[in-house]
Amino acid sequence: MKYLDPKNDLVFKRIFGEHPRILKSFLNAVLPLADDEKIDSIEYLTPEQIPELTILKNSIVDVKCVDTKGRIFIVEMQMNWSSAFQQRVLFNVSKAYVRQLEKRQNYDLLHPVYGLSILDDVFEKNSIDFYHHYKIVNIENTTKTIDGLQLVFVELPKLFKTEKYKDKLLILWLRFLNEVDEKTTTLDSEFLSIPEIKEAAEISEVQAYTPDQLEWYDKFWDGVRVEKTFISQSLKSGYESGVEKGIEMGIEKGIEKGLIIALQKLIESGISEAEAKKILHIH
Image (cartoon, rainbow, N blue to C red; front, top):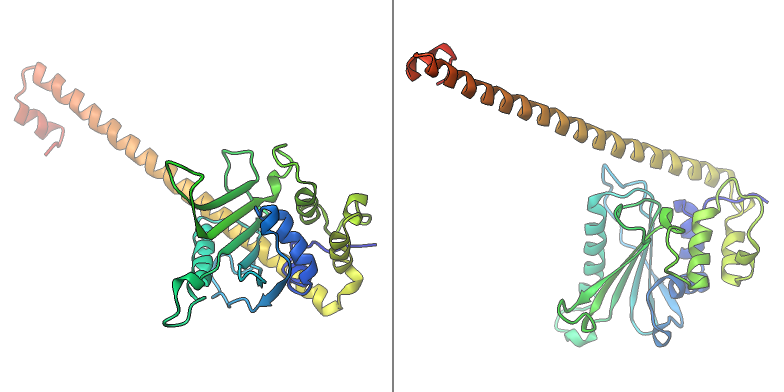
């Protein structure tokens, strides 16, 4: 059996955007929900259209849903990281929170909004932890929180660099996203032991897609590669520009120091300061 990569926009949306039972299992496993906060059932909401950007336009996939408690969940698969992505996630989650109310409705009708971002990239380079949970907390007493917005970022490339997370279902879902791709011909038996992951794997089978869909699948990866190249070149250009500027500054400081020493030497030799500056073209 051959499979497609579930991180691809086409496959990701089919797995999590069309099968609420699978999405519920995934969210309950990955989100930081206590036992009494687990999702019972969900209903899909239409994801808002995001304007195409020069960067990131090929790597955003959205699934948006609401559960029976009124909580809203926004799920994204991000192939490439940029500093703007985190702010965009916060903006979208905040917008979903604010838009819950119609005019003249009371604030106590607001429900929490969760933003879950799965990243096939690394942004916290100084940490081995792959799971990053953000919420509004009291700085002096972190047990005190304000309900409303919560963000979770998961870095797939760092999945096995820490033993901190022991939750089997969490790890299995993330492993499924991280390990299954076009080279996969047989699945780990642990994946098949979880009905929802087994179903997600079946949805990822190549035979489930038409030739046109497979062509679109390949075009998505072409777009991601172009985007990675764009980001890499931008970083390289910025680095080279910074190095060049640093060299220029170093040369300028060196010349400045040299002129000061030459000026002192000329003055010591008996030449007036004004004459010495004229010789060295110092104004």
